[in-house]
Structures are given as structure tokens and as C-alpha cells.
Length: 469
Image (cartoon, rainbow, N blue to C red; front, side, top):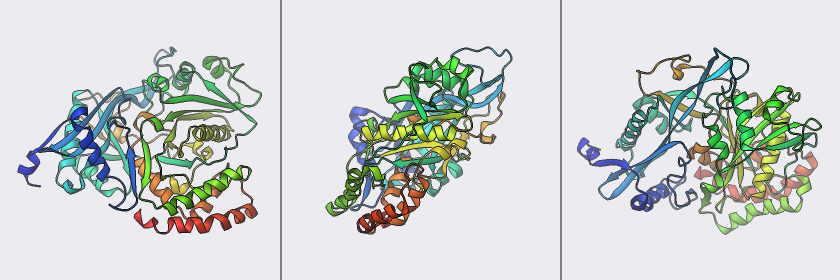
């Protein structure tokens, strides 16, 4: 595009009444999959700003050429932990508590870019770059010190735009772990008691134990009290505490059991739904067969292909943490509980995102072919006139063991990753994934029976469509 043409592209704030239909049209043509074949459709339920609406500060911009919208971008700003330092006085309170003795969090104002879209006919013309620059200007005007974005490692066009043209650097590579929701209930160990926490108790627990975790949101109380947060759940050894004997977070942390774990659940289903379109009735029927067998024989705990051919949502597990030699087992029990909660609410999958160095990730059941081993986060320092403080330049800091992924800004590309992987499943992939699922203990003879029933259906279902992805 010539300089004159790019000058005709106007970037302005999104106006719901004026722009909604035209924005949705661009979203549709940017779906995953070639035209006329299988594609991934994202229904934002009439709210194009839904992905950032729950953040403390947010903005959506559109790029307009004449009467046509040719691109859009979303962004939000929040205050998060970027490091930790030693406390001078060691005082404690329920808002910004001294963590682990004298360690206290160091906060910074960070911005997040997501939902960048450019109409396929207008790409490689500088529109995406113009949208990013305009959004960064808003970030700076509102005091953000850093900006970051997330994308797939192999999304070369996106990586090149941000690292080569926008000055971002590769920063973190967390793992997206996804587990399908089966027709049968997941097993929760009888040796574990799961206690639901009130938002106020959960806030104190998170601040006292996890406030120094990288990307921990300073407004964690807003996250926990949000209507989309379905609750925070604590796992402890049976016989230590129950819901009736729960002493509160302060007394619990002063005398904790030898092992415990905690996580919260976010209802993304109420924000948007996903749907794989373009499948024939035969393919739908064959996929349904695996679920029918699973539902008819729940005691066998057989895996089944999720129903992706009609609108479905997912739950996101966040705030994962724990302590003790059996914390991994506690996490496994919590994930089983979260699976059953998602099953009751009609979700297709359960997902989470954790650091690749997170020790507790070994307790999270997931299918490898649905998951993304290395998501890519890129970061940029927006100005040089900020005080380095106790952390220095955050973009140059080494990763920690854990990372806090805010459920309010789950990136769109995460959805495309695990959905495209589901469609690509083969009989070998299911067998491989079964071996990864600690909650799915199927004897070999039962697997052979299942393979005889399911494999012909799966091959017929998946072979014609795997090339789409």
C-alpha cells in the first residue's frame, strides 16, 4: 500500500452502535480454515469488546478505509507484579501483605494487546502496524510502563510484526494445557477434601502466598468477585480440615497441613462460544458415537471426542498454587473437581496456562494434542523515563517458577490452538493422550475393545478434514 493509501486509513475508537455489524463481518472472514470448508467460528455474543471488558482499563480501536472497516485491535491496562523485594518494616495487612517473611511484591503498570485483526484482502499493507502504534500511544497516555502480547510460536507473521517492526522481544513461553470434558465424571481421590472459599478468604490466601508471583494482578479482589469467577477451591488431605472446620485463611496459613493446593475457575462460556462449522451430518454423527459410548459405559472412563460442531464454551482454571510433598496430588484432585463442574455446565473443554517451569503442572490432566507446550509472550518497554526500582528493566529479567495468568484476558489464539488440535486427532493421538491422563486408567483389554469400536469412526471422521489444519 502506498503512503497515500495508508494515510486514508483512519484508526479510531470502536463505536458499538455504528461498528458492531462491520466488525463482526471482519471477524468472520478471519476465522480459522479456508473458505467453504471447515472453519472455527467465534461468537462473541454481540459484544466485540467482551475479551477486555472486565479489565480495569480497556480500549478497542478500528481501522477504517472509506466506509469499510479493515482491521481492529483490543488493549487493556492493569497493575501486576513484576518482581519482589525485601520489606523494610515487615508489617502485614490484608491488602498488600508481606509475603514469605520479608518478601513483598513490586508492582508495575502493564498493557496487553489482543484481538488484532486485519481483513485478508488488506494485509501486508501496514494496517496492523498502524493499529499497534495507535494502541501503544493510548497505553503511554495512561501510564503503562510495559506492553505485551501472546501468540503461537509458529505464527511467523505475528511474531515478525511485533519483534521486527514494533520493538518487542520474546519474554515468556508458558504452556497451555487443555483437557476435554467427557460424558463421564472425573475421579476425585477420596483421600482429598475440597473446600470452597469465599472471595474474601481467597483474596487473603492469594495475597499472602502468591502476591510475588509474576503477573499477579494487584486487583485480585476484582477478579475473584467478578460474576464470571465460579469460585476458588482448596484441596487438603482428608481429616485435616472440612468446610465446617475451616478456620479462615490466616489461621490456616499459620498451621497448614503437610500438603495443600488451590485454584479458581473462570466461566469463559459466558463471554464467547466457539463452533467448528462446515462438517457434514455424517461427521457429526460419527463424533457423537464416541460420546454415546462414553455416556453408556461411564464406569469404563473411556475418552470421547468433544462436540465441536455446535456452539460450546470452556472453563479456565487460574490461580493455581500449593505447597507440600503431595501438592501435585492435591492439584490433580482439584482438576477432577473442575472437570466435573465444567461437565455440569455443558462445557467442551477445560483449559489452563502455567509456566513451563511450574512444578504443579504434573498434576494437571491434559491431552498433548489439544495443548500448546510453548505459547509465546513478547514484551516491550514503552518508555525510558521510568525508575528502574528494585527490579530493573523487567524485559531482561529471568523467568520464575510460576506465572499468574489473568483469566480476564485469555487470548483468542489459545482457542484456535486447542480446537484445531482437536479436529486433527487421530486414533494414535487418542491412545497417546490416554497415556498422559492420570485420571483415565483404562486396562489394555478395555482399550482394545474401545479401539475396535471407535477407530473406524474416528478415521472416517478425521481423515477428510485433518488437512484443513
